[in-house]
Amino acid sequence: MSSMDVWLHGFPLPGTTEQAARSAERQGYAGLLLADSQNLVGDPYVELALAARATGRLGLGVAVTNPVTRDPSVTAAAIATVHAESGGRAVLGFARGDSALRQIGLEPAPLNVFTQALETLQGYLRGGTVEVRGTGARLAWLPAGLTKVPLDVAASGPKVIAAGALRAERLTFNLGAEPGLLSWALGTARRARERAGLDPDDVSYGAYVNVACADDVDGATEMVRGSASIFAHFAAEAARHGVPLTEADRSTAEALRDGYRESAHGLTRSAQASALPDAFLRRFALAGPPEELTERIAELRGLGLGRLVAVPASRDADPSFVTESNERFAAEVLPAVGRSELRAC
Image 1 (tube, rainbow, N blue to C red):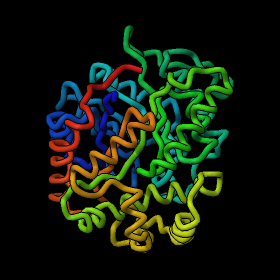
Image 2 (image 1 turned 60 degrees about the vertical axis):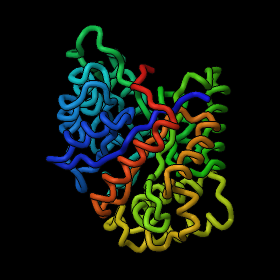
Image 3 (image 1 turned 60 degrees about the horizontal axis):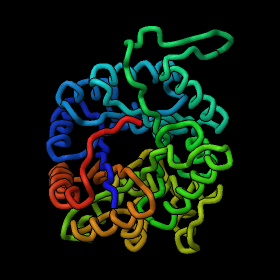
Image 4 (image 1 turned 30 degrees about the vertical axis):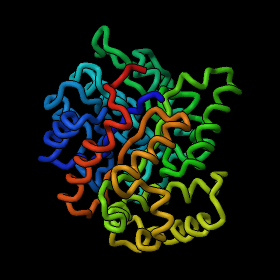
């Protein structure tokens, strides 16, 4: 069976990123992705530049930015700068927006705004001229010979999945570790490309998955509770648009959606996180001993996923637990999954 790239998700907190990047590279992760949420964490592009200088192989990206808090021209210039400084190791994660917008009272970008932003970004990143408000614009400073930054769309619902499948090199699903949901998402993406006359295999597919690697299953489950509530919220909102949840999970999703409080985003000690049943979390996240995680990841790989983004414990989790979990996952799960370096799209 083919290998799977495993990336690590993290927060761009000043003073921590360089060491986190060195550790991720040493441990064999394919890349490091940093959140873009200006009210909760530092600037990801500043921290990615520091990570670029601290590493030599590690893929580097933002996961994820949006078309509202940053104009597409600003986003394209920022990630292309990281790409140039890192020797072509950058990836741009892009979505409609979540905490970066909700923390300042805004809603995710409408689908048409999001779709137009994808096309504009691709024009900039290819070095072309794009029409913006009646003006032809381009990144005139791009170095000659610089490879294109891959665009990676984070998606949950069918319309965003289809938009990303048609316009990006990568598509990463926000639906947890549920094989049934991920199989549905893959089918949705592949059908969208087939209907457009495009090869469905020309896109790299992946999934964001909450991960806590520890023998104590109950303890591991608690450590991902807050983080998993974020991704469960994505699935809950997408369920309104056709994501096929079971009746039991639909009830859980509705309760989560109705009671979600942005002020407690990603925290274990929050009402939305506490409301998630343990049984749901153990299916939705990868929380447990290495042998169990290895088996479950093999199942996800068998669906046709080529990439996994491991999202560690919640924002308020014990940092020592997060470090231990990441190290153990790297030492005991990555070798079985298959390590690989960042590949050009």
